[in-house]
Amino acid sequence: MRSRAPRGRHSRSTRDLILDAAEQRFAQRGFAGVSMREIAADAGLKNQASLYHHFKNKKALYEAVLARGLDPIIGMVAASAEVEGELGSAPFLDRIVDYLAAHPHLPRLIQRAALDDSKYLRAILQRAVRPLYTQGIRVLAAARQHWEPAEMPHLAAGLYHLIFGYFADATLLEAVLPENPRNPAAVARQRRFLKTAVSRLLGDDGSVQAPPPARNKG
Image (cartoon, rainbow, N blue to C red; front, side, top):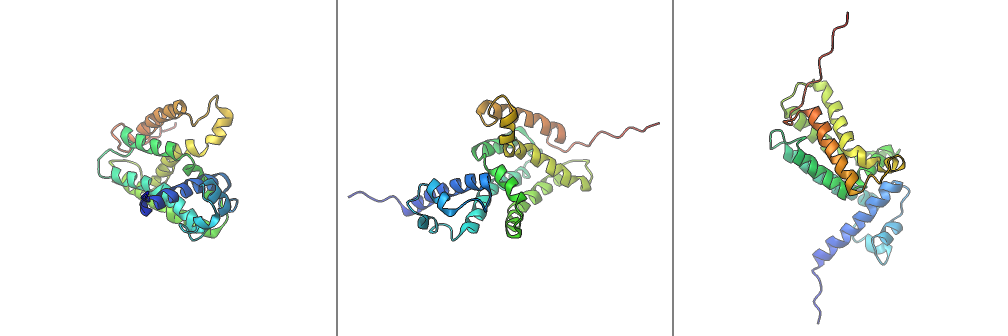
């Protein structure tokens, strides 16, 4: 008699398949444009009812997709606070780029969620993204730096767009670039550019560099 696979392992595997399918669908068409039936079919489930064994409704699934995507990044940023100069370092950026390359739909999912007019979905996005912003500001503020406190939100936003923007706008880039921006060679070039750009913004040692002083006119 054949033994059955442990139920926990099977459940986790099925849950991940559902989350993978949902992440791609939500990134492509937004929350309102996707049905649970489509997600179930993409995940290879025999019927839609099987999906509800893992998520009670579409809102719960949407929240789980955002949490699964963002929690590891929040962890990476938090871990960088333990090592002086880690934020903006090559190893840190390698980890982030590797993660986004493996989850290319996540940046677009966040971008699309931000454009949604639903107050409920805006609240979900705020709960999911605010910890990343808060942790990032905390790490930047703790670094040796000369930026004014009022400039920190702009610094954080600039870093976010540098890192996430390439993947979020990959479809647009695909229309103008001579190659697929998602292929390994293109991602490798973006990785090198990102390290150079962030190094110049934060300083070679990972500390935040002051902007050049304004020249006096006259």
